[in-house]
Amino acid sequence: MKRYQLTFFKWLCVAYAVTFASLSQAGPFNPNNLVVERIGGDASFGGSATTPTSAATAVFVDEFTKSTGQTSPVQTIALPTSVSGSNLRLTDSGTATSNGYLTLSTDGRTLVLSGYNADVGTTGVAGSNPATITRTVGRIDQYGNVDTSTGFNNGPNGNFRSVASDGKNYWVTAEGSTSNFGVGLISSPGSVAAATNIANGNIRNIQIFNNRMFVSSGSATPGQGIHAVNQGGPPPITSSALTQIITGTAAGGSGNMSPYSFFMLSTTGATTGNYDNSGLDRLYIADDRTIANGGGLHRFDWNNTSSSWVYQYTIQSGITTGLRGLTGELVSGNVVLYATTVGVTSGSSQGNALVTVTDTGASSTFATIINSPTNTFFRGVAFTPVPEPSSILLCGFAGVSFAGVAYRRYRRNQRQTNETI
Image 1: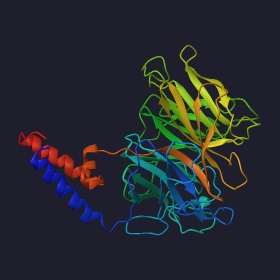
Image 2 (image 1 turned 90 degrees about the horizontal axis):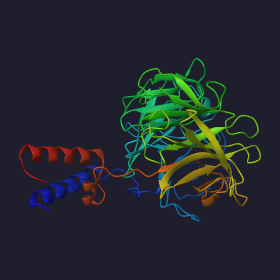
Image 3 (image 1 turned 45 degrees about the horizontal axis):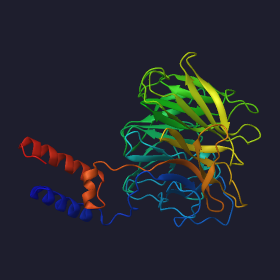
Image 4 (image 1 turned 90 degrees about the vertical axis):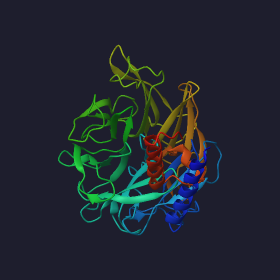
């Protein structure tokens, strides 16, 4: 490495340490680990002596490896329970099962999650008026830095459920109706403002796959199942239609399915002969009905001949309850899924579990990674963020936006002077 490179990185590390020495932050995430949002308990992964209530409850993000049989997280990040500067509180209802579904931004650099700017113990927080209790959007970067300066103050007096991001914009879902938004957009992070109405309806989870946006719903408005938002186009920034691609009865069982999180991918890498020419040909849905009524993990494959998603089977072996949180990955040709359950898969503690399964067919069996502490609940699950730019890791712990901007400016200056990095 050339001398001016070393000088730059020495300067960068010193500047980072001086600027951020007074901030409280967790350690950097480990690549390719899992993160789970937990409602209740404490930052030591401790449980609670009392059962959860609908009052505002502390929120934590726990990091785990993918191994089964764990007893504690790699680390835990506590979301703020008091206002600090521009950062808002981020708490959530202890019993709102449709809330708390964190996602990884499509650029892979940030975890985003939903919450309320309310003190712990605030009653009825999920049904509060956003004009009175601001909705908080939390962001956690790959180095464990927490930012809760973004929020919105309009929309329905109901649950704020999940967030998706492309790294610039933030789409939020809520318990909307025919006349109030269920999907909203925040295009100016770092402040509290009204969210733009994208689509009405009672929406649960939101995800972006291959530059296409999808949402789940368990309500007749807009319909139980999975919906594409702005079908055929990128994630929208203006009012857009919802197109139902999976109906509530598509997976069978007793009554309509109850979809929460979902995961879509291309198993072949092809860009034709699949859904909407997006490359997507496989869809998994977490359903929280009881096992007897059809809950579990539903698999759908895209059928190019019928131009439709076709139900294949439901994976239930190894779990005794339905599922809510979900993410996955393609590993050596097989899809590996990670999910959170409605309740624990074994034992008698009040809580639930993080589980995993490799899809090799209808008889595939779930294994438990870890149970949540007593009287706490795991909600969403995602992969850890990845560093960018990776060369900043020469500092050992740098990587906040200041470092990235400084390095990019440095590279630009070097190119302008025809020096090679």
